[in-house]
Image (cartoon, rainbow, N blue to C red; front, side, top):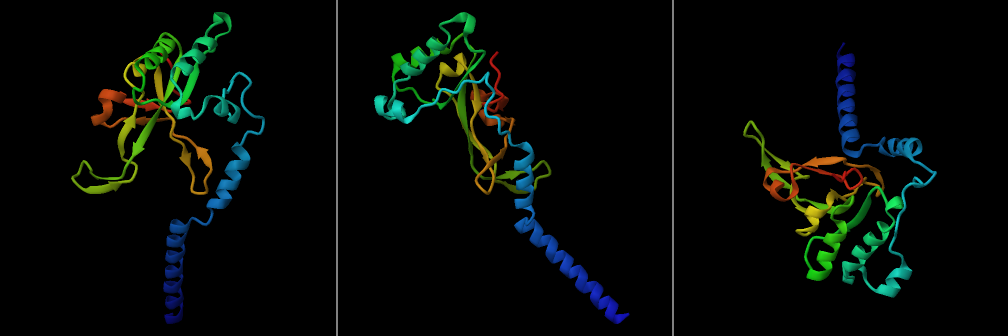
Length: 205
C-alpha cells in the first residue's frame, strides 16, 4: 500500500507539472496553428468585386513619401471613383490614419469629397496596460486597456465613417483572427462613440 500511495502521489505531481508546462508553453500551439491555416486559408485570392488601389514604388518615386502628400490627392481619387454614378463603388475604404490637420484647403477638399458618399477611414486603438478596479473592489492588471483612439481629424470624422485598422498578430507573426468591434471606454466616448467597428466591418450610414 505504501508503494502504491507513493506512486499515486508521484503521478499527481507529474500531472500537475505537465499541466503547468502546457499552460505556460502551449506545446500544441504549432499543431493548432497548422490546422487553422489549413482549414481557413483561402487560396483563390480577393473577391473580384473588391478593387485594391495600392501605393506602389512607381507611385512613390513620382510623388515622393506618402506622409508628405497633400490630402487633396485622396480627394481627387475619391472624386474620380465617384465620377461615373452608374458604376461608382458601393463603399471606399481609405486605409490611412488621418488624425491631424496639415493644410486647411487640402483637408477641406477631402472632407467635401467624402461627404455624402460611402467612405470609411481608418482609426488606431492605442492599447496601454493599466491597473484597473473590478466591481468587487479587487485590483487587476489589464494589458489590453484602451488608453486612446486616434480618430480622423475634425470634419473628416463627421463626413466619413471610421473603423479601427489594428491587426491581431499571433505570436508566430501571422494574422489568423480579427476583432470585429470593441466597446469604447466611457472617457473616450465623446470622440469615438459607444462602439468602434473594425475597418472591414464599419458600415456607412
